[in-house]
Length: 381
Image (cartoon, rainbow, N blue to C red; front, side, top):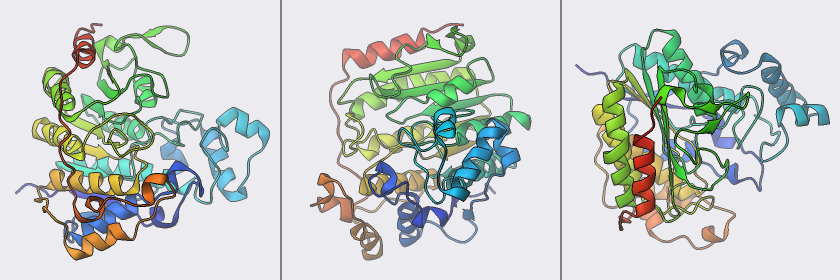
């Protein structure tokens, strides 16, 4: 009998905020958890409380001095100018907040647990708190203090996994993960992201600067698909069918890791892409169907209603629950309790409270998308 999919969460995300005015001031993982509970999608034996990664586990990728600096920042709730300059703590959207070590370390612990579970035979594991793909070995970057996808992939490789496919669906390029594995042919990284969006990386599928000034070709094992503003559901379906699935088939991974950031949705304030959550669900579902084992992570997403609905729907697709046309009262109540200090949050549309699925946002498949796919598929080592 096939083991059930597992969902990893933690109560640490319920009260933890990056700061009142930060894009991550919104409740995301906790709302996803509450919504899934209200829908009856987290029965006993499915939910796992996330462990917290310790300094030694984090040091598999991160500089021990950096790990110690994050711990000290949490303890003292401040950093010196030297620490700020050296490690990026307390600067550039990476604030010092009360759980600045424990929260990201818990997300990493969840992704490490996901790796252990799939290696032990669980077919699918979801850690929506994960997906912090910008984290650098010795520097915070892009709201990411540690890089849980890298740590999970390293755990898989360290324990004998032959090949890992990493697919990044976030609106922002998965730069930290690609750079971590630019010279490792056991890992194929594929990033679909908005062209010209921070961190302004991955514009060319094969020419990625890496430390030392060389170009990253990764033996053909790094593919980038930068997409234009207004990227729609039809275009995402084309990218999946024409690029992601053929790459997966050719690479033949033992495990697929999906970064399911939902800031590419039309309702997100930090990108200019136009997907419905249906497109994200279909992309994840397509990978479930071809993956021997799959770990799905969260990532970006800065509209609380869009994130909660998208991530709950991902979980439904991962573990096979039908999505209701209208949410039952308990689930609707979860969404009605949300608030958002953004102009879009002043008068949310009724659908953000009463439904899980967006309306489809199809359209033409533009030449820019076809070109991005063709360039990614043409990369050679």
